[in-house]
Length: 338
Image 1 (cartoon, rainbow, N blue to C red):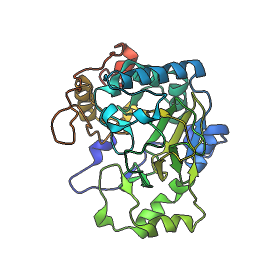
Image 2 (image 1 turned 180 degrees about the vertical axis):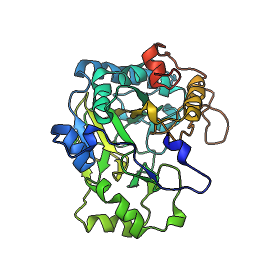
Image 3 (image 1 turned 135 degrees about the vertical axis):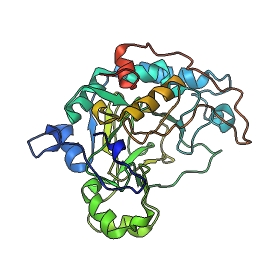
Image 4 (image 1 turned 120 degrees about the vertical axis):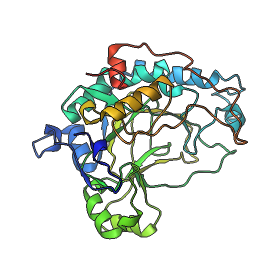
């Protein structure tokens, strides 16, 4: 039975799907071991560097297609007026960017899909309709975002339900913006939720934000310390949705323009028919959702609005360059069945 079918009006705890070989105590090494034991991992060279660089160039072309004075070589042009509307974490969700051809091409790279096939023990996967992130370092026109530690899994879910991913199209060094994780926090999450939180505050939405400093202190007192994840062009960063994390901003020493694609995949068998229908509807609108591919699907943007509440005149009703509608893509999107 699909997890979404188990969410009644009064939520109950949902146990994880049946474990795959990856999730058992059988021997594993390399990135698979890191993901299981640390809650995050870096898959090296998931995409050949030359192709990853081409995807970055396509992302830059997309960003410059709005007809502004944006110049990637002139930091003084890295201002709000020269950029499409972004969320507070420098991600682009609107303008149909989620379904641009370069986004889907990167998400269908063999090395990316192979990693998730190993994790779940099946190649019959669903993909998230996730975002593009292009972060310019040392912008002076926006307030610097602080830490916002969170997990992307509801307290009602127990065990591994989702693995999130970042396709790195730019290097991520210690000074650069990027993913920051609390290694090992996924293993303590059930104990934390049951002993340190009030169940009446739990939500079925797949997120829990650590607003109370005492909550993070509970983890650090157990030797769980934050770590900046470093990666190279073409690497795939993976993390368990139970692992505490957030997107850190570049330090003042960074000159790197962060360019990444968020991409998560889970087995199609976990999705209910209602969820698949909802994914198909959102896909038909070229809309974005969340990090979750198979459940709790919530649409992000179809139309893009300015601060004054009016629709951005630069908005688009379809991708600038549509993806090729292959059987593979349509199955990943949940439009066709396996």
